[in-house]
Length: 441
Image (cartoon, rainbow, N blue to C red; front, side, top):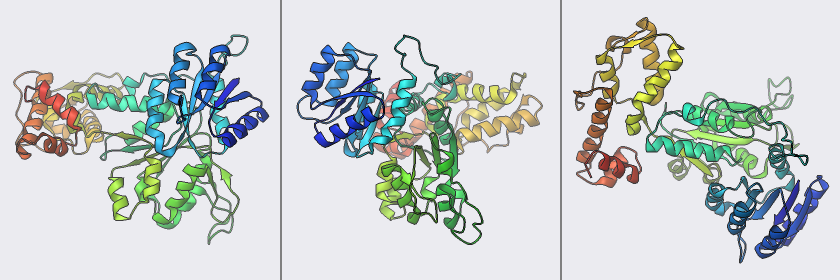
C-alpha cells in the first residue's frame, strides 16, 4: 500500500515515514500542502495521511482534491485535540478516519491494517471482507423524525472512525442499542464488544474490573485477573453510567484514551490498549464537572463525538413505527390484535421510561392477553388529564398528541419559544419545525 504523509512538522513527518517503511509500507512524505498536491497530480497513492492544520494549503483542501480526482484514495487526518470539530467535518467530506496528536506512531498500524483489508489487491481481486451487517441502519434505529434521523447520521459517522463517543440520554432511550450499533457497523465488528455497567461495582472493585489485577495485589487476589480492557482488546469497550467511576480512578481511564496504555492493579508494566471507547450517561456531565464529581479533562476527551438521544415524548411521531417494530420482535411472526382503546392509551401516555417502557408495556400486554392487547393488560398509568382523544385513526391521534405537547410547552413558557424548546428538551430549530408543521409558528 502506497502512503503519502503530509505534515509541516518535520520531526513528526520523518519519524512517521520511517516507522511506516520499517512496518513494510511504501511511504513517502510531503512537507506542505503545495508539495502534496504536486505529487498527487502525478503519482498514485492508496492512502494519504495529512495534518489538518497547515499554512497555505491545509488538509481539508488536500482531502477535497483527492476525493475529486482519485476518490478511491483513502485519507486519514491528523489533528490536534482542539481541531476535532474540523476533523469531524472532514469525515463528512469523505475522510476515512482521524487521529489526534500527539500519538505514538505504532498506534496507527491497526487502523492501516483495517484500511488495507478493504482495498483491492494489486491483482484486482478484493480481499475477503469482514462479515457484512445484515440489517440496514434504519431497521436497527427505528423512526423517521428529525431527531432520530440525526441520531442515525451520527451513528454512521461514528462507525467510520475510532474516536471516543459520548452517548447521553434519559433512562430507557436506547444508549445500549446505540453503542452496539456503532460497534456492529464499524471495522471492529468481528472483535469483542465489552460492556461495563459502572454503577454495579463498588469503588474499590471498579479499578480491578476495568484494568485487571495481578496475583497478590490485594487481599483475596489469589490469581491474576484480566480486566475489561484486556477482554476488549482490538474491539470496543462500552462504559455505561461512566459518571459512576470514582474520581480517583478516572485519571487511569484518561490515560487509556490519551496514551493508549494502562497497568493492571499491582503491576508497573504498561499494556498497550487497542480499544475503542464508547461512554454513556443519563446525567449532565458538564454539570458534574462544575460540581467537582467528574474530571473536566476526562469529560472533554470522552466528548469527542457526541450522540444525544431524545426522550420518546420529543419524537412521538415515531410511535406507530416503534410499536410495529417492537411487536414484530415480541410476537416473532405470530398473530396479535390490539383494541382501539389500547391504541389510544399508547398515544396519550407520557412515556417517562421512554422506549424501554414502551417495549415492556407491549410485551406484558401481549403475553398476558394471549395475543390480544387491551388497555387492561397494559398496566400503565391513566391517561394524562391534558391529553385529548383523537376522533380519527392512529396517525391522527399521534399528531394531536404532538400538537398538545407543543401547545402545553408554549403555555408554560408564556409564548417564549426558546424556553418551550428547553422544557421539551428539544433543539430550538426542531421545535420551530414542529410548530410550523402544526400551524403554530
